[in-house]
Length: 467
Ligand SMILES: Cc1cc2nc3c(=O)[nH]c(=O)nc-3n(C[C@H](O)[C@H](O)[C@H](O)COP(=O)(O)OP(=O)(O)OC[C@H]3O[C@@H](n4cnc5c(N)ncnc54)[C@H](O)[C@@H]3O)c2cc1C
Ligand code: FES
Ligand code: FES
Image (cartoon, rainbow, N blue to C red):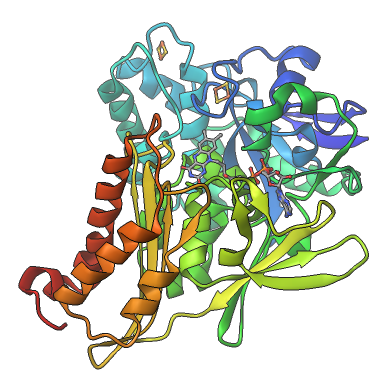
């Protein structure tokens, strides 16, 4: 039995935990305000808000319901457009009307839900922040400028909002119906989620699996849902290591103080990964195990010299470097019953710098043509330790081991970088495909390799001298 609150109504259902939330909402509950577009997480037409108790507070996130397993909302508050409607248009809906932000209207509900999600999460409303909240919504007929204008107007109307009293503030001003104020107490009355834990197919956020196998998954009982496994959700510091639970999301990392402290550019880097909705759903372990050669989080964590812990069904645990996890195209050093439980890496010290670069056809909501990350430690102008990763340049996420070996112990000098770049070209084996020709990908990685140094040590590239 799965229990959750849908808008103002408590739901108890025996539908399979693997059914998509979208199908449940439209076909079981007949709430047809939520639209079906791509069914691949790409267009945002099916966006819902999911509220979860966190540290004594209700925390809402937008998600694409077409690739969310029903079981992932057990114990939570699910909000569709019917749940934010009131007698009049709410200020978000009104802003869309006033700025001419809708024509055929097919995408509009998704935009409204993403913007309502922004209202529920921001304590520092800005035009940029509101526009950023709709980075996972696509409109085919209205110009984006009018939708951006609506987002900007909403940000203006949110001035003065306070994190501590967010829901009351929004209810008082008509952004939300007043039943929202009853949700925290009503969530406490729900039974502890009873979700499958022993099935063969492990599902995190579902953002890769449901795109690949939607029909197979929708009705199977054979799933194991790990998205809300409490011990796999936290991000903490343990001595000189940062430890990340397998089910942490990109959003979880962006919001983590431990991660913000270690990575000053974290927000900028993570914004390059998918969209707000997908960052709220996709897990770190899902990115690793999906084993795409262009996984962004994989490139990010390989360069951090991360170690993953694999937990077997018999309670046996083993650790290995993430870079050694990949054996061939979609081939992993992992037994079928093993699950990734944690990721850990050394906290960067004051001599260490980190950078992530990605080139894709669109700046946001697109997978990479080529991506790369670097972790580098330089003491007195000499490279003391370096780890470089690259994606999209071979059958697996690539650790550029020979290049790192060459650069270790070298002074930070432009000529050394030129020599290193030749080694990179020998280490990689890109193929021509829809994301670009072989030569294009080789050129991209070359440029991104230099971009790391331009970003981290501008003097080296500009003057060709030691930093
Ligand atoms: C619209 C869209 C945009 C995207 N954009 C990007 C992008 O820009 N960059 C990018 O890198 N990716 C992108 N992705 C891919 C995807 O979101 C990520 O790979 C995400 O991190 C996958 O995590 P998940 O939890 O959703 O995986 P799931 O789909 O739940 O699982 C993926 C695989 O991992 C396995 N798995 C999950 N958790 C565990 C575990 N703890 N132990 C063992 N196995 C496990 C599953 O069995 C499955 O084989 C995008 C996806 C979509 C739909
Ligand atoms: S239908 Fe397109 S994101 Fe769900
Ligand atoms: S208004 Fe038609 S798709 Fe956006």
